[in-house]
Length: 594
Image 1 (cartoon, rainbow, N blue to C red):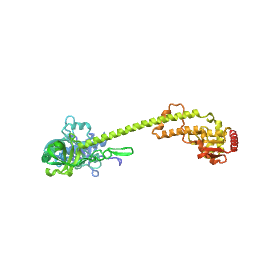
Image 2 (image 1 turned 60 degrees about the vertical axis):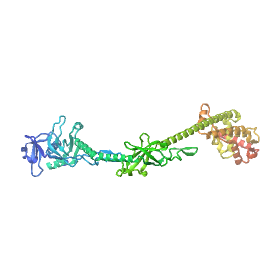
Image 3 (image 1 turned 120 degrees about the vertical axis):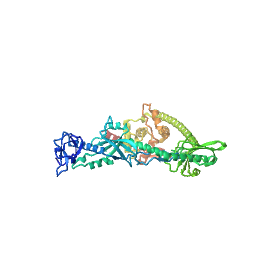
Image 4 (image 1 turned 135 degrees about the vertical axis):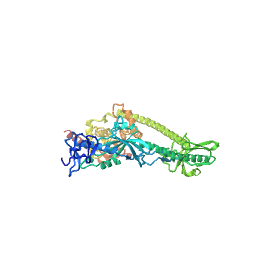
């Protein structure tokens, strides 16, 4: 046998004649032991030499594995040991205690969380039977006896390789039989001789035991709870009821001081910003000045009424009317919360008391606190109505403002469309964009120098570019360039000569655009207004590109053009320079075409 392969030694066998379990030290050596294997039922040999521990061995190789034989031997031996017991120390089984709650919110527990009904005493066994037939199942051992004077039965199942299955457990749970499972390890059979004392110690060890069904413990627990209720709970509840009744009677004819009620002192989701809103750039607090719902006042008590968890006081208020108010009594050591929901929508207070004190000392003003206030509920309802009304007014004004903005944006959009159509219809034919004229204008602009309004800034553009980097200005540059190229252009070019294009229409359109962009959703309205048009409308920007261009030209080419007139609104071309620039431009154009 290899060194790493486990070697099981059988310390017991089954007598061929009696069928009883025999230990190795009870039989003769060799085949004279007259024993069979508890597992495979084949002959065993008693090996009782001087070197190795005495044990049984198979006379011939077993039909099953030696492990299976060892498990069967351990299982049968354990059943035999259990059946020999006269008393049984039961494994503790803990139960959640039963809880009673008094009117004052104190909790009474029948026992601590570690109390066990099966502790302290042993189960006295009167009869023990192996494989007892219970009809639809057979426990390994059935113990019959009594525990604390209660007759009971305990079924013991030995777990070596197979635990109690669900089918068997379901059958047991329908009966009054307690079920205990004991788990044993087959390693107890490895190398050496397992003694009966060692195996008995393993069986009785509570760590190897597991309760699967305990009607005995449930019965003891129920009896214990009933005893606790009779001896502790009922006397305490009766004493509290007597004191509460005395407390209520003492208040009749006395004056009861109702504490001050504040808006924000209650344990709910209300906070100081609940009734505030932001309007017209300012925060409006609707609850301002209403933080105190009612001041501290004293009223005579006309009568009292005991309820399940509270005392109802009928206070004499203005006009001799009786007004009910509930007082929930709570112990200063209470573990339960005071119920927030009132009874019959009645104003409610909580009063912390010391149950051991006399009822005459219970009513202390500093221990009273509000739980529910009818007046507060009305104030909150009123505040919420005010808030909703204010919000509705704000929403209505916003809708009206939005309608006005939409109407204004629609008018501005229509005005822009009309101005655009007017511009397209009024633009002279000679100022329209043509490739040939633009190329000439570009060459002239190149000769005028560099900068944002001339030179390369214009020369590197195409007829489809945005001149000066903004849409709608290309036509102005072409108009200015064509005025330079046409032979009928006078030496004096004034800004007012293009007044219709550069001032009247464009500035009007700029005003409309500026107003449109300032309106909320103005661009969206404009897009909706122009969506049905087949052409694309390119919106211009403010100012005269021609004026800026000529101003810059006067700065970079002072020998070509000078500014004249009031506020620099006119420009004069210097004679002789234009012809030279045109000649250079045409020469450059020819080079460009080549």
